[in-house]
Length: 141
Image (cartoon, rainbow, N blue to C red; front, side, top):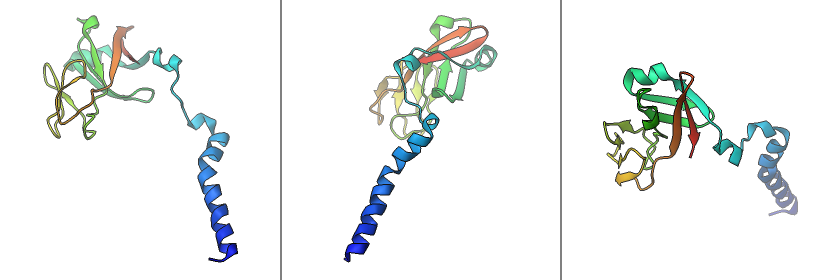
């Protein structure tokens, strides 16, 4: 390999590897880092009327991602909220009365998002949920 070819590759490699840093420097608002403050923040994810209509509400919120809330306004302290993405292969779990079941490979999770039987090995992400001002709110646990 000629010295000129080597130097060209080295310079190109250096520039390419530093490209993410350069982009972050010029566009810092595009990168959102989770902070302790974010964990204590409540996010409005839907309307109580939509939750009461079916007993569940599936939304994709820009701040928290996908959320499946189970319950009704008649039992506001009994709301369950999880990220419905199965930890096995990423399918969306369904609420089947007492458990979350993955339609792809039949992983089963309890109402707290914990694995009852696999193939999933990790629990679903859980949120705190509340009803306030005719809206459904969640925050990361």
